Length: 201
Image (cartoon, rainbow, N blue to C red; front, side, top):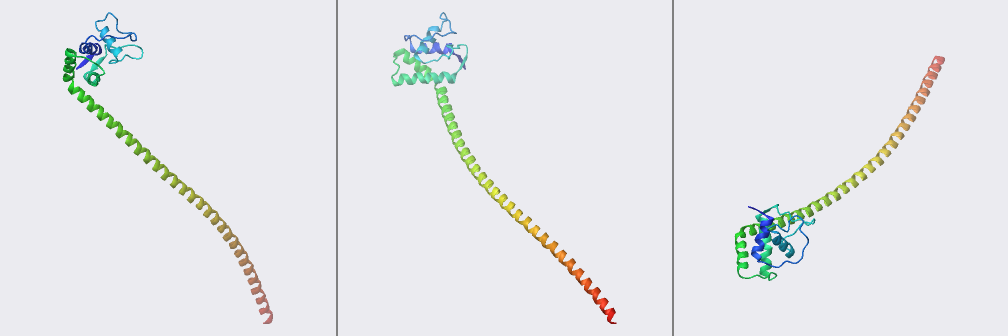
């Protein structure tokens, strides 16, 4: 069931009786000639209902039974704590309203408890996620450092291999020169031996 804010204000005034109102901000969107103006103003003055920052009440806005139950629970708490005094018929009227909306008030408390638990779970999950992100970040940095170290070692090894290849190429060229020289010397020796052999025979 949806109740209008003006109807809710009137119900509270009935429950509270004709409590005198102190001065409050002007309520811009409720005409002083409106049947519920005095009730709304009194409830706003007492702090049971709030007006928006632009001093509007927005009385045509629908009000759920849950919101009404929450406001009623606040009123009952103030009566029970002695912050608000009322007697006889007024107390009976508030009790009757409380009994009628008991289910909604319990539902409201239950929903608020569930919301609080959900917020707590989300906060806990947030801490776990932040911890996991921190661990992964540290692990990633460690692995990146290892990759950097491995890359540096590989570059050093590659430079060393290039030096070894250059040395081998130098040795190979020297070997090839020495072999050519040896072959030339051998052919000269063979040629001389042939000439000497022919000359002797």
